[in-house]
Length: 184
Image (cartoon, rainbow, N blue to C red):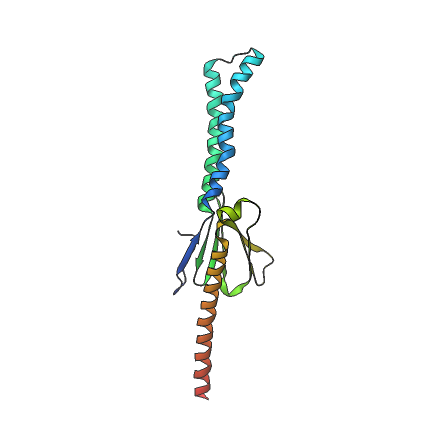
């Protein structure tokens, strides 16, 4: 991925996508929309007594199914290209809005103030997905990842990375203070 570059010493810890169950749920309306003309056209022909020429009927159905397929493909693209990348120093939020509309933002782990997980209603606890919100210092906006698998596990991973980063900074600060004290 060329959306961002890793800093020296920074490693990718985990890449997080939405739970696969969500794409199955999102395909259901498109499946219904794709099958709907197969039910409506015969009923329309019988109730009105009006028959469209076969070529016209195929053309209209073809255009209709093309738009349904395009919408389903857009949803699939958004699903697979929206992700969070957790590194040893920061979290990168890549959100795909449309085919050519993508937002990439990142925030340092040292700026994380609050991490909240939500697993509520019927399906999320049964299947194991939920919402992870991360609030940072100095920003009004929260970074949200909706529908991720096992949000508590991701929250714990982020907390471990923050603790490791703070321990590394604390050790570096102690060494620096010791060197300064020795020079005095």
